[in-house]
Length: 343
Image 1 (cartoon, rainbow, N blue to C red):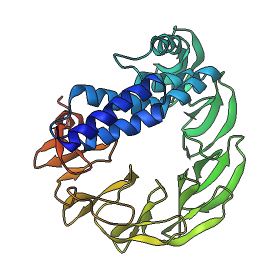
Image 2: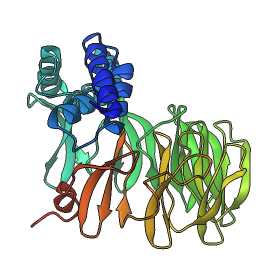
Image 3: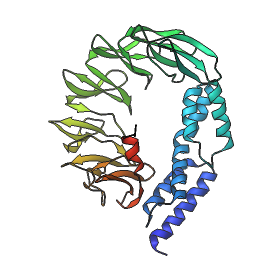
Image 4: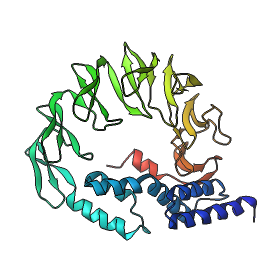
């Protein structure tokens, strides 16, 4: 037995034990490591166990909290991500409860209302666009103005805005009115005034904002943390964000320092310590210090983020799973239908 096969079996077995002990984070790390010791194609058991452990790590605790709070719509989405053949009976039971109690949109006479999964109407149709509850509130549109309602249909933020983002981060969300953007808190109070042309959500404590046609970053108090130097930006992930200067993309840290030179044709974001970027018409993967990964250099026609220790890449017209060494470990041609669904 080769060293790689030995290591594969060791970490695979550790992953199974950890999952049974409900140590989902450690289990996920074990199966990610096992992927990199594969000498042949990925087998179905490894893929399923890796997927299960990563999903449980990311969603189980959150889903249980949402369920306990009565936010059945969000809990339902998370629990469905945890529904595997070997899933716990508790998850199937909770999905059934969520499906009965979740408040979901329905349409009547061209207007949107809300009813529970058991068919009981909670909020009569009166809104211009479909909307979904996120925890205790939903962003809805009435007379083509945005506002926010609670789970009983009471208006908690009036219909005064041209846009409200449906997600709150750091207790803030972005709004737009008269072609200017600002931030409000969950009570509808303006926390950061209408001084920006565009605003983004907060990621890792910073939000990208646009002023005088340049992008910078602010913190939740509105303080400018990174000055307005950039032609375009993305949100921070794993401590780094893509930023564009003179038509090329690179990466900055939370102090605004360029860590990876702006030489790339498309932005990327880091996932599991690797970012997929485009250079000279080809995609490859770089580390947080800008080094090109061994075996995953710029040779792909498209590429996607790493997850569970593997990434999907396009080579000519076909898609494959690769591990962090660039070894092809499985077919991913389901992407063709996903990206170009047949009519």
